Length: 283
Image (tube, rainbow, N blue to C red; front, side, top):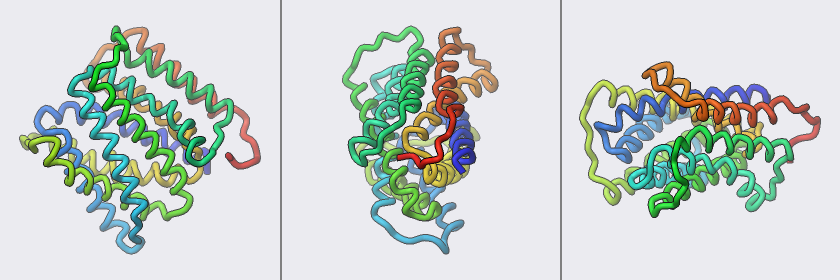
């Protein structure tokens, strides 16, 4: 089951990497939090209808969704005063934070191969995203780092809750919680605006059905069988997939340094994936 879970999380990273390219084109015509609110609301409706016979209320699931949406909002707030490259690098810091938070809260000890893989992938993240950027911390960067911390908390919490709740129920509750949190905060952070163009409609519908409803269900199911550190490491493939999709779809050209960064990320993942499995369960 761990191998299936690895493949499921890798496919989720592919979806989110491709979605980055789709959403980037749409966000010129729709405000960011309004887009997230629409996307997660539609996803919650689809999940609610699909899993209606299996739903049970739990505050924990809604809180999980609020943490997830907080990460998205802090990342967006940081982008107002930071460059996309620096934002991508700082957001990728959740890869390093996950094993630390897992130990701090649940006393989960990551294995040596996982720690080495995380550090290798983090190096690749820096090479891939920081193209000619100077790593100076601006006031808005603190929002981005807060977003990275929220994403790390979400992965650690989901790793703890996924084996304890049915995947269908936990997926619906966290997506619904994220949507609710977005609508509550929306009036305080931006004036909603949207121009209905095909790119915007595609981003909302594809984002809701594929990148939210399916992807978060896949993540919730997979994290029953994987440690949070291993999950975070596989999610490090997301910028690599985004890089490949951007090259294939819009012809974006990247440097040799970016290719080297992608290679480091792949090496970090393979370091964990190809190491001999132990018969004992992960701590």
